[in-house]
Image (cartoon, rainbow, N blue to C red; front, side, top):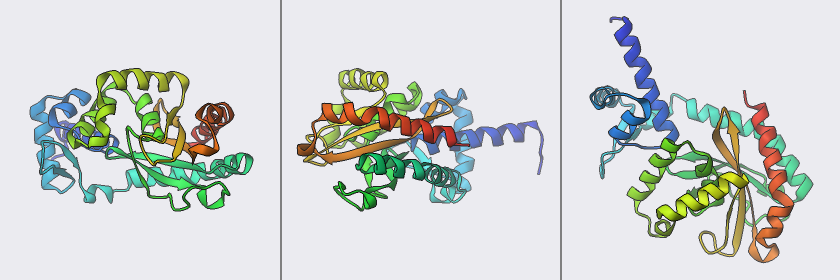
Length: 255
């Protein structure tokens, strides 16, 4: 097998495509080409090779491509999540011990936020101890909103495009351009996002902050509470800064 410059360049480009798909969940050929600065013909050729080898799959309902289960066995995203959970755990415990409220760590996966670590089991104020592995909607959860607010432009566009394609009825009011522009900018400026009881998980509210590493979000920290127990303004006043400081501590320990 040749190992010339063309093959090395093709390998590098193929890996970049896999990294992009790992980050955004799914994307069309044109979106991949635009994000990576490659001709569409090159992207098609690389995707065909990756598909033949079993590393990507084309959607049966639209033109998007995503990583296959085989690609997941390569362990990059899994090991990254594992490292994040290991690094974050002491800080999560510290927050709950200091403030009593449970805190969740979630990461992005295929147009959802997935709770990877939690202190619900050690908090007397937990609303649900079985949170690990729970999937959260991007636009109706505070963690999804916090994550999207700090996403780079192209990554955010790809995720929102994916959400529009899924056409979930409950998401439609939040997919309006005016809502997205106004609210995501607010969340970005204030450094945290919120969710009331009307949009998701009735009778509860939540507050989330992003964890930033190398100028991009790698996860979010959230607290959730019974809405009647605490008004949003009070939660922000009491816990937003502490949650942000916890995120900074975690980011500082990421290798």
